[in-house]
Image (cartoon, rainbow, N blue to C red; front, side):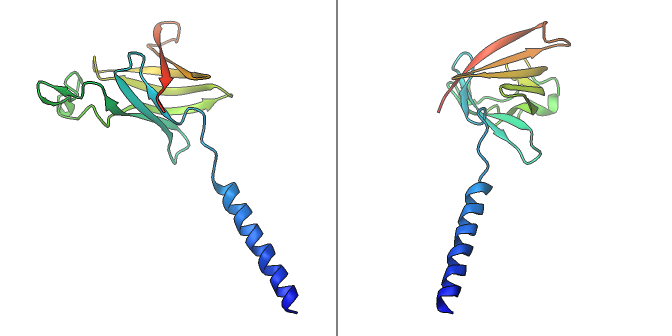
Length: 148
């Protein structure tokens, strides 16, 4: 009888550990720290609870302007001019499209205060980030590199 209960406990523990291991979802290839194209900033891309991908600025080579932390002075909304650039959410609402594509999102450029439609394509150690207006043919691609 003791042997029967011991076997049940061992099986229960195996199930718990197997379930726990499987419950840790594997991170997506894009979820990491990236240098922007000029290597003047690092953007942390993560998957949010809504299942979409977002990215925020977590490091700046030059975090200050005139001795003070950089703020969003070019934002068209005057009320946002005091928002810090460090920590700013610049990538929003991306859905995974296939193995290497991410679409349906936007990118905000704090250097000019504009938001663009955006798509990203993962290629090895690089992430091609294409911001555009209207059609993706009219835009610019920046190549981001892994920072971690």
